[in-house]
Every structure is written in structure tokens, then in C-alpha cells.
Length: 297
Image (cartoon, rainbow, N blue to C red; front, side):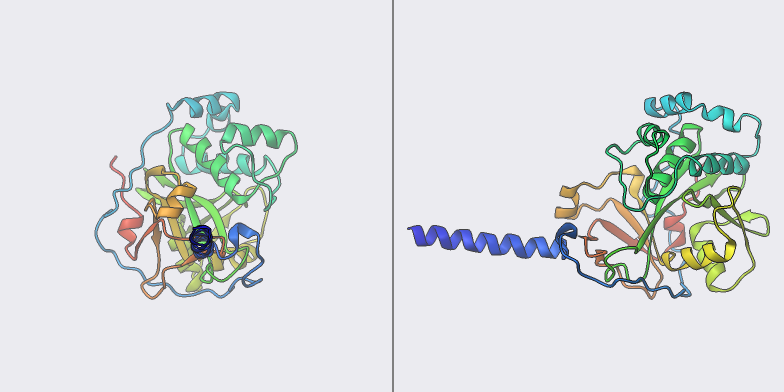
């Protein structure tokens, strides 16, 4: 009887270990495994138009949500934009303000993931990651009535590298232009071509095809040349959460689909994020219309 119990326990242990490695080859970062350097090449990507918003992405006005009202009042966001009438310029002013609140630290994550807490910690001298720049910019802009989303970017070799393969920024919907605009709050950068702000995919196309475009960088954090060299490799996979859903550990275990990833027609679906966790929560599309839905006025 004891042998049967021990055998059953051993089988369960082996199964659990195998499943753990399947979900996270690095066991959550305990094991050093993977490439040290990312693929820095820039690739020409190809997408199609496809159906319009097949995945039901929705973006609503959240400015009356309690936590965003508190954020707007505590940090006097209205004063930053009250003399600015143009939506583009308002977004630029908020992004510049957010970028100036702390210096980047790629290893420090906050204890709480909301803008008020992060800004309060920043006032104490704490520094945070690109994730937090994006989060704070998103909530500040949402508090002012903008339709804004977090956009995740990943290098082509995201499944092979052990670090440095991802970046997080934002896209804001400009109603007067009826289009999405990419912003990078970590650097305080917006890219424009012929006076029109670019979304993330348009920026990638401009870089890959050596097109003329400019960056607007009020805080002078980085040159255009350095930014293009830095951001280019990350513009390979593009992903957003579906309607703001949060992805929990349980979601990752069972593979709940709460994310939409845009990838080039010749790209392979990524298997892992830096070998830390299996990417099994995403739908995939090659359609720009899926990823960039028009928002009803």
C-alpha cells in the first residue's frame, strides 16, 4: 500500500514539474536560460485589412470613474491642459508631465498598480519601469476623457531571450483625426509624418522602409537616431488586452484568451515571453482593422 502511495506521489510530482516547465521554462526566473541579447534587426512586416474589429475591442469614456476622478483632482491634471485646446497638444503635455515625474528603473515594480500610488511613490524618489510610465500616462489621459490603451511590443526573438525583449507604451485615439496615435511615455516621444501622428504599426513601417518622419520629444530625453535604433526591434509583435481585462496567474494556467496580438503574415506566433511564462492568453490576427478599430463619434 505504501509503495502505491509513493508511486502515485512520484507520478504527481513528475507531472507537476513537467507542467511547471511547460508554463515557465525558467520557473518564473529562478533559472537563467535564454539568449542574452535581443535580435536588433528591423524587418519589413506585412499585414492585411481583414474584417472590421472581429474581436469586439471597445474604448469608452472612463473620466467619471472614481479612482480617475481622484487622480485628476489630486494631481491637478486640468491645470496641465487648461490653456490647450488641441487634443494632440493635450496628450503631448500630459505625456511630458508623466515622463518628468521619475527616472526610469527597469527592475523596480511598485507594490500597487495604480497611478495615484505610483505618483506618490515617485514623489518620494522611487523609480519605475516602462510599464509604470504607460500605466500612469494611460490613467491620466483617461481621467481627462481620452480613449487610450496600453500597447505591448515584443522583439522577433521574444521566445528565446531571457530579458529585454519587451516594451510597454500607449496608443491614444484622436477623434479629430479619427485615428490612433502611438506615444512612448518612458521617453516622452511621439512620431509624426507629414504633420500626422503615427500609430505603432505606421512607425514600424516608416522605420523599416527608411521613410522620412520626425519625433516630438519636448523633454529632450533621446535623439531621433537613438530612439529609432532602440525602438525598432521591439516593433515586431504588437498586443493589447481585450477591453481592459486583467490576466491572472490562473488565466495563464488554463489559457483564457484576454489579449489580441497583431503579427505580420509571415511571422510565427510567439510561444513564450522571455521563457518566463507561456503566451497562451492571446488571439492572433494579421488584420489592421482588427487591431485598429474605428471608434464611433
